[in-house]
Image (cartoon, rainbow, N blue to C red; front, side):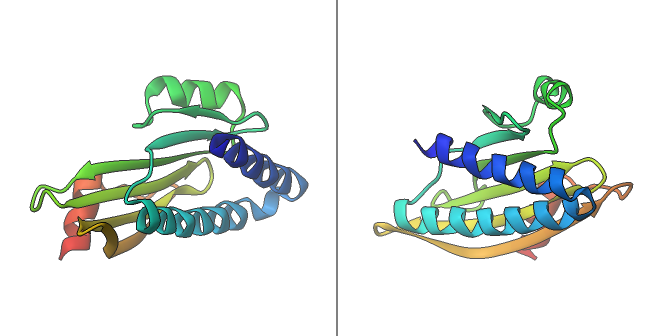
Length: 153
């Protein structure tokens, strides 16, 4: 059910890009910002969210993160506009902390998203730190480890 809804949202995003390709960056960044907001609300309400990867094409496909070479190859075959993923990692410093990485990669736009730290405990989940990032096409991209260290600083 949830994946069907997500697929429907992605189809609308792709339709908007096809109608006005000059607004691709704005459309994708706006969608990811709204999606990230929904992710945070889901985490606060349920305590976690299922990691996933979406190949954003006219016929969206879903995969498990991390984004693999196979997913990239398939995205090219599907003429996907972007690849969006949500990943979760246990924090090294405290076992009650989870690091979430919500990202999107799109040709001509770059790699962008958010890294956030969630504190779990006493029946609740609270986002305690978050950091957006954007690596425009051609810029040097930081590793997830570097982004986490920057967020923690």
